[in-house]
Image (cartoon, rainbow, N blue to C red; front, top):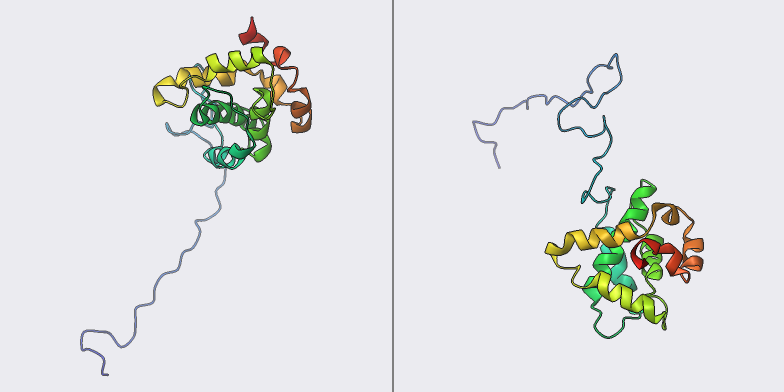
Length: 175
């Protein structure tokens, strides 16, 4: 097949990407949209920032078969509340959530125990009621805030061991 008349015989040399010359100073977060200069925002209802936070939902759904819910508890509420705690733990370490973060969050509230303390079941019934609904974000944040950051900084094996002493962990909401 012959080449059409309007196609040039010699294609134009395309310019390849070349990086700009070396900068004489380091990069600074000085644009209005850069939050790194002053750090991440902090305050009420801001949450816990971190990378790839949606992965915590994937992990939580994979662990659903291991959970022990009582009558009146809904999986969506349990997942929403515990994922908030898992994200708080992950962001405290400056990383994306892992299976250990989610497993620890479920253990703190006794969802991994077949027969948790009746008082804990009553407490989590109050805390977790309807938190999966988007309009209950403040209640979901209250669940995450109920678990002290110092406790979440422990290794996951210690958190899983100490989860049975839930009264000392959730002292702020038990009183």
